[in-house]
Amino acid sequence: METSIGNIPRHVAIIMDGNGRWAEEHGKERIFGHMNGVESVRNAVRASVRNGVRYLTLYAFSTENWGRPVQEVEALMELLCKSIVNEGRELCEQGVRVEILGDRSRMSEKVQEHLSLIERETSAGDRLTLILALNYSSRWEITRMAQRIAREAAEGKIAPEEIDQQTVAGHMATAAWPDPDLLIRTSGERRLSNFLLWQLAYTELYFTDIYWPDFTEAEFDKAIRSYQSRERRYGLTTKQRREK
Ligand code: FPP
Image 1 (cartoon, helix red, strand yellow):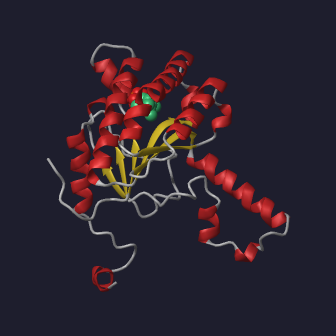
Image 2 (image 1 turned 180 degrees about the vertical axis):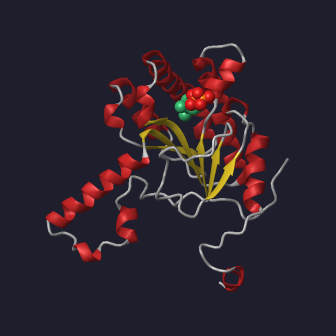
């Protein structure tokens, strides 16, 4: 079903959760859930382009995910490389530009080469920016921001009393993108799991019990409709917001 025109979130962020449980319920290995999750990534990208969403951020691998069994981590990295090779053409055709959020220095050389490849291959995309959060966590990003600002202060480039919210936002790894308007988390969990803690300050949250491999375009549209029914007040009253 189509969503109504207008009030489309400019930036949607998704915590893709439930691949492992989906696989277990189908009597399969966890990686089977991740493999099926790639189809849901395609669904989310297509639905974003169709709805006119301009930024889509996907939490694909957190800094904590390194702690998973080594076979699962390796299979996820392999799946990422394979998806990059397979999806490049369709992403270009849809006008999607891929960008990476996170510390890629810990990834293998092969993964880093694939990431550079997809960034180059899709750099002309101007309909949707697809941001893949890889080896990302909000606390990593906030710590890095503090180090970067402290370094500039120590070098005399910035005075401590001049540091404001714009300075902080400008030193985040996400500085180039607007904050998310809508956050979707699948699989029934209701937490942020170290994802975009600064950027989600005024974001509308949408939780669904659907496991990520079952997340269809229709489910994406449902989340957009829920967003469209919300009133974002940013700490003001309804009357004040209407008069703005
Ligand atoms: C969370 O489910 C999912 C992940 C940690 C990985 C997400 C990866 C993909 C969807 C595939 C590859 C991605 C791209 C961008 C091509 P979980 O394993 O934590 O599920 P569980 O909570 O049920 O165990």
